[in-house]
Length: 405
Ligand code: FEO
Image (cartoon, rainbow, N blue to C red; front, side):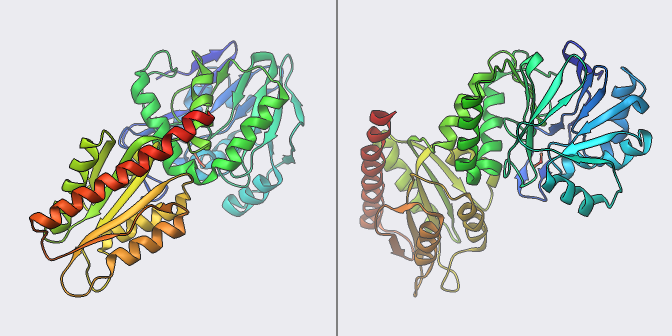
C-alpha cells in the first residue's frame, strides 16, 4: 500500500496491522485489526506527526521514502507517547538524528522513561505554534485523551486536526477515508473504541471539545492516529463524541450473566423475554463465552445494565467477576442497573454484584432477584416481573433526556 496524499503535500505514511486481535495487553479485542496512522507534512520544514508501533517502523520508512529521503525529516511531532505511536521513534531517529521532537512536558518525561534517548526535544504548550513554511502547526494540550502527555496538533492553513487517539477506531481497512468505507462498520468501531478506551474520560473529552469549539477554528478534516480519516463529514464523529461524553442513552438494556448449571441462564432468558415484550431493546451476553469489548460497546448507548451470576463459594463466578472489575473502571453516568442469580444454599453473588454496581456509579434500580437451585414456573414469573419492573424504570428515565436535549 502506497503513501496516501490526504491534503496537498500532506501524506498518510502509517501502517495497517491487519492481524492484531488483542490490544492494550489483552483488554481490547481488535477483531477488525487496527492501523497506526502517521502523517508526513512536506513544507520548507519536513515534519512527521506521530509514528507507528515498533515492528512497523520499516514499513513507515518505506512509505516516507516514496516521498522524500527520511534523512530530510526536520521535525517530529509526538502527540502521544503510548507505544503504538512512539514504538518506531528510536528507529526513525537513528535515520534522521538531527530531527527535533515536539511534545508536551509529560511527553518528554514519558519518552525518556520509555526509550532513554538523549533526543533534541522542545516542550510545547497549548497555543504554541511551529512554523513549517507555508503552513504552521498549533498545539493543543489534551491531557488524558488518552494519557497525561497527549496533545492535538492543528494545521489552520489546511483546516486539519491531528488528534491522535481521539476520534479513532481500531479498524484495518484498505481505504483511508470515511467516504470510501462502510459507514456502519466505521461508526460501530468508533463506538467500540470510545466505550472501551475513552468512556471513563468522558468529562475531560467534553471539556476539550467545548474548548476547541470556543477557539473557533475551522476543521474540514480530522485525521486520527487509528483507523479511518474523517473528511466527508468530520462533524459526524464530533457529534457522536458529544453524545457519548454526555452519557446519552436510549431505551436499551444489556444483560450480562454467567451460569454454572443453567439456572441463572434460565433467569436471564426470562428477564430478556420480559424486556422485549416491554419494547425495550435488549442485548444478552453469557460473559463466559462472549467478547468483553463487544459487550462494552453495546453498553455505551444503553440506559440499563442487568448482571447475573450463580453463587459459587459465597460470591460471583470468575468470568462475571472479571467483567465487573473492568466495568467499574468505566464509571458510567446516567445508568440504572440490577442483579440476579441462582444459588444452592447460601447466596452471595447478588450482594457482590450490587456492590460493584454501586462502586461503578450506576444507580441500583431495584432489589436483586435470587432463586434457589433451578427456577420453577412461579419463579420464572418472578423473573418476568423483574424484567418488567426494570423496563418501566428504563422507559421512565429516558423521556427526561429527550425533553432536555
Ligand atoms: Fe493509540 Fe493511547 O494510544
